[in-house]
Amino acid sequence: MTQPTHASSDGKNGERPLILISNDDGIDAHGIRALVHALDGLGELVIVAPESEQSAVGHAVTIRMPVRAHTVQYEGASGYVKAWAVTGTPADCVKLAVNRLLDREPDLVVSGINQGPNTAVNVLYSGTVSAASEACIMGYDAIAVSNGDWAADADYEAAGHYARIVASQVLERGLPDNVLLNVNTPDRPMHEVKGIEVTRLARSRWIEEFSPRVDPFDRPYYWLAGRFENLDDRDDNDLGAIDRGYVSVTPLELDLTAHRLLAQFKAWDWT
Image 1: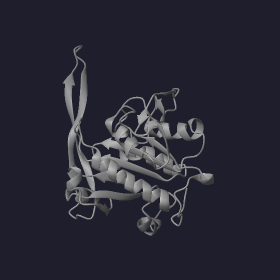
Image 2: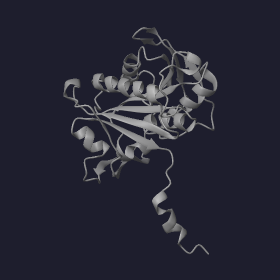
Image 3: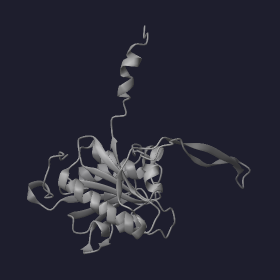
Image 4: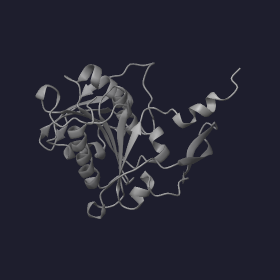
């Protein structure tokens, strides 16, 4: 992984930076096509993405069945881009890309652009974020990018524009070890987006609801629904930023340890 003092956007050995692109919405999703066009010219682009939608699979990896990959024709802004469709999860895609499919190590991994935001507690469920976090685990600079609009015909102009800005900065400066960036753009047209704010994750949760139903064979099943609950009353977080029309850039750390509580728990009687 490059270090924060890194001051060149050249790739390893002076080559063009290699940018690996993945997602969780699938290789044919509008968001990944927007991302490929947005990053055109920043380096050599290679796509390794799920064959079908893998939303909300989190950091799942495939261990009890084979993972298959096949090349696909993929046209970017400046011509055809190398691309593979993978039968596994977003994390599988990054693992397979680095270990088998790429000719060299990536300088940057960008996951997205997701259809819908990945803010607050949703980062724990998100396949988009998990592709980036897998890259981070493997030692590569990584970004996850999500668009605030859930619509099938969502406008990705702002998300693509700011994805390029963030990617350019990471290629120029590098990221600290074990840190990735989670980028969320507001559900607004490009001219209404106010810029970038660096934020923290909001405190939130899902209030789950399982709707009971019965299939045509009279067997019961349950359909997951629910509502999102924001538990944070401050506006310096990712939810507050996108609500106010800013792009949220949140540094995420792989270390989930509650360091401030270590001394408290060490004082418990463990005998």
